[in-house]
Image (tube, rainbow, N blue to C red; front, side):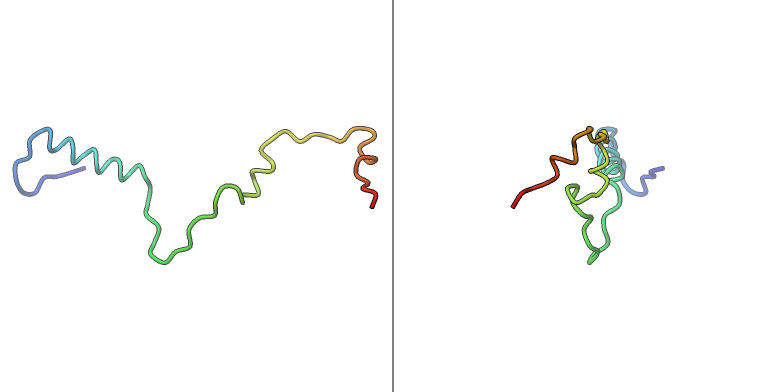
Length: 68
């Protein structure tokens, strides 16, 4: 709940202030100063398991050999 302590804001001013407060609340908490930033999405190991896991075919072992 928001309470106006001083002044007499117009409905437009109050709506603007409320919009700013709601936008900040929707953005989530700010990280603490000096805290490590979260890892980027590309390094998330869970992204590997997002797709369908396919089973190898009957001759898949033959494609694993690399002559060299």
